[in-house]
Every structure is written in structure tokens, then in C-alpha cells.
Image 1 (cartoon, rainbow, N blue to C red):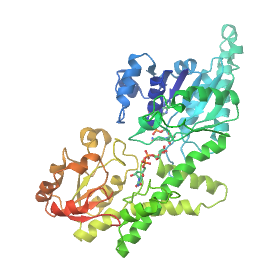
Image 2 (cartoon, rainbow, N blue to C red):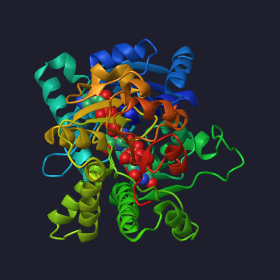
Image 3 (spheres, rainbow, N blue to C red):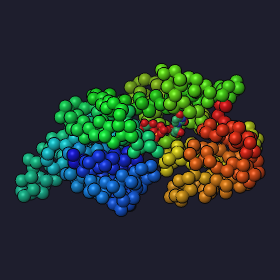
Image 4 (spheres, rainbow, N blue to C red):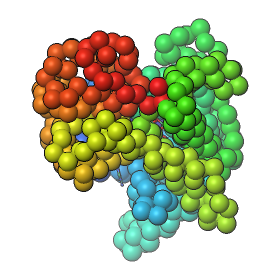
Length: 462
Ligand SMILES: NC(=O)c1ccc[n+]([C@@H]2O[C@H](COP(=O)([O-])OP(=O)(O)OC[C@H]3O[C@@H](n4cnc5c(N)ncnc54)[C@H](O)[C@@H]3O)[C@@H](O)[C@H]2O)c1
Ligand SMILES: O=c1ccn([C@@H]2O[C@H](COP(=O)(O)OP(=O)(O)O[C@H]3O[C@H](CO)[C@@H](O)[C@H](O)[C@H]3O)[C@@H](O)[C@H]2O)c(=O)[nH]1
């Protein structure tokens, strides 16, 4: 099928590349010229395992193209994905201006033929109808322009009565495993009221639904859930809010474990074995971050507020997380007492492993607070240490390896559980430090191994 994906970030580029990989003909549109130039040369502007490989094979097979020209994408695609960012506004609500610009842009470039316009961005409930209205506005603007353009252009007018439907197709991929998640989704949600549009979406996803590209092809088909627009939009927010609340729950229990002398890793195992609870997302630590959980939970709280409903549980999940994001600071103060003049080294900067994404990363809060308290901050991150300057980090010296990081530090904080951090020469690192304190913000390291290496080991709730 012919597909256009507008917005080539973590979601749009992965979606475009994976759809091209399974045989669709994809044009990816982004208004960032530098990104488009890079992608045209076969390079991914983001770090995501496996992405460069499938991008390059899709380019070679001629299934994918990149452009800044929205009109080229819109005329190519029978299915048009909106995958631009919806970052948070200071009030907590979602900033939908990029979606608005794209929806109008689609309308202004429709040139006849039936199109399915798909909201893949995470958008407030009710956005499906709003996007439909914006597309109509775009069409109306186009008609006005054409009418003003004189008789020759007016001949084209009938074509502009394009037929289209809007579908909500929320995305559930995780950064760091985005390609894997796209080929192995737990479900596909399709919200809309047009059977024609839903059927086209089912055809688009058929190879994924049938597990042709899954790592385990013996699994049953991927469940496809067809809903109305608002329910699909709510499913996205509810899923993220549930997962974020689950993490806040385990962090709350971890804080109680710290006080009563229980071990949260054993407790999480013990409750996770209950199939009604499940073992996933029970990893206690320094809290949830990233480009989705914080903004999506806040947006849902804001939506509830708009309807005069106070989402107390979600607000509590947010406030537990805000406190948790500074738990490492509390533990550093307990271990070192005074932080002024001390040097703290951060192992990891990104909000989770296997990504280069620093959006709302707990490391950023920690750097800010440590600076405020007069500590010097250094960091080593397997990805950011290679691309550090690009991210405009301030208040932190980014080192090129873990041993240089340890050198002269009074404490290390493991912020991100990069796999590489399980194999460092911790005994050597401990010797290079002024005080060998290890705050394990992800309960990732083995306490006994750390003690043998010469560290005072402090976990979260253990
Ligand atoms: N990042 C994730 O893991 C994830 C997962 C699920 C859902 N989502 C949702 O998907 C959406 C996209 O998230 P993301 O992380 O990929 O965002 P991103 O910021 O990484 O990418 C957005 C892209 O859109 C481009 N863009 C902005 N305005 C444009 C315009 N007018 N025309 C063309 N391109 C334009 C930007 O240049 C950028 O490349 C958001 O709503 C997000 O909440 C994200
Ligand atoms: O047990 C856990 C699991 C995660 N986290 C933290 O939670 C945050 C989010 O992690 P994760 O969900 O793995 O990454 P994201 O890429 O942000 O993915 C989430 O957000 C995406 C954007 O909406 C959704 O598509 C995904 O389904 C949803 O998992 C990170 O800071 C993690 O460190 C924990 O602290 N403990």
C-alpha cells in the first residue's frame, strides 16, 4: 500500500521504516531539513537498535523516500500518518500545535482520491474530530486559493472534494526496543467509525498481525481492537497512566522497605508471581521519565480537570514520582553528609538504556540539584558520551569512559541500567575514587559483588 508518514521522530521514522520493510511504499515527511538530508543518506537521526539496518534495506529496495515536501507525501499516500510531537505545555496539557499544522497541511494538499488520515501522535481525547475539522479547513483554504487563481485552476476544483476518514491508531512502542515492538506488538488499536478506513488499516498491518516479521512466528495473531475514536485515544493515555502508576506503587513500597529493612527486589518478585499483578514494571528505582509517561499522565490529569474531575490517584502517582526522582540525592546526603565541594559521577544519562533520548530524564533533575548544592557532577553514558555536545547538556562534565568517570569521585550514582554497566571493572573504579560509594538508582548491580569490589553499596528499597 502507499503510505505517507509525517513527522520522523522516534515514532514516525520507526513506523515508516518498518512499514517499508514489510513491503509498503512509504514517503516520510519532516520539516527539519537537516534530518531529511541525513535520512536520505541512509542514516538515522536517532539511536534505536536495528533502525539504521531496516532503513538502509528499505532505501535499497526503493520502498522508502524522505522529503520535506508535504504535498509529495500527501499525493503519494492512500494512508497518511500524523506522527509529530505533542510535547507538554507548562500547564500539563498537550501542545497540539504540530498536529494542527500537519492536519491543515494535509487538507491544503489533498488532490482527490480517498485517503485515511491516521493520528499516531498521542493526542487529547476528541482530537479525531478536531483533526477532521482542520483537514476540512485546509481543503477550504485550498479551494479559496484555487478560486482566486483564475479559470485554468478552477478546472481542477471537483478533484478537491476529496473523501477522507480519520482513524486513531495509538502507538505503544518503547524507546530502545521500538523496532522490535513494531514487529511484535501486544495489540493494534484502531479507532474510527468508517469500516472502509478500518479495513484499509487492517490490510496495512496484515503482515504484522499474521506475525510474518515477528521474532516468534508461532505466536497467535496480534489482537486488533477496533473502537470508536475517543476510546482509542483514551486507551493510549490509560495504558501509560496505568504503567506509570504501577511504577510509582512499587517505588512507594520500596521506600517503606528501606525503613523496615525488607528488600524490594524480593518483594517485587513475590508479588509479581501473582498472575493478576504480573512481574513487569515492578522495577523500583529513581522514578519514571522519558518523553511519554510524564507528559501523558499530566495531560490526562489536565483533561479530567477540564471536566471538573480531580484525578486523585494519577496526581498521587505524579507526586510520588517527583519525590522519587530525587531519592538518589537523599541517599548521597546520607552517605556523604555535605555535598558542597564533592564530586558525584553519574553512570548513565538517558532516561532508559538503549536510547539517546534525554527528554525528562531523571539524570537532568539530579544534575540540577547537585549543582544547586555545590557538588561537581561528571557523567558517563555509552551513547551520550559519543554525542554529548549535540545535546547541549550543562552543569555536567561528560567523560569518555567509566574509569575516567570514577577518577576522583566521592560517589557514583547508577542512573540508567545500560547492559554495559554490568561488566565494568568496579574494583579498579573503586580504587580511583576518593570515597567508594555506589548509589544504585536502578537496583541493577549485585550488592555483594559491589561490596567485594570495595564499594559502600546503597540501593533503592534494598
Ligand atoms: N517516543 C515514543 O516512544 C512514543 C511512543 C508512543 C507514542 N508517542 C507519541 O508519538 C508522537 C511523536 O513522538 P516522537 O517521540 O516520535 O516525537 P519526536 O519529537 O521524536 O519527532 C517529531 C518529529 O516531527 C517533526 N515535525 C514537527 N512538526 C512537523 C511538521 N509540521 N511537518 C513535518 N514534520 C514535523 C519534527 O521535526 C520531528 O522530527 C507524540 O505524540 C508522542 O507522544 C511517542
Ligand atoms: O519497572 C520499571 C519500568 C520502567 N521504569 C521507568 O519508566 C520509564 C519509561 O520506561 P519504558 O516504558 O520502558 O519506556 P518508554 O519508551 O517511555 O515507553 C513508554 O511510553 C511510550 C510512549 O507513550 C509507550 O508507547 C510505551 O508503551 C511505554 O512503555 C523509564 O524512565 C524507566 O526507567 C521504571 O522505573 N521501572
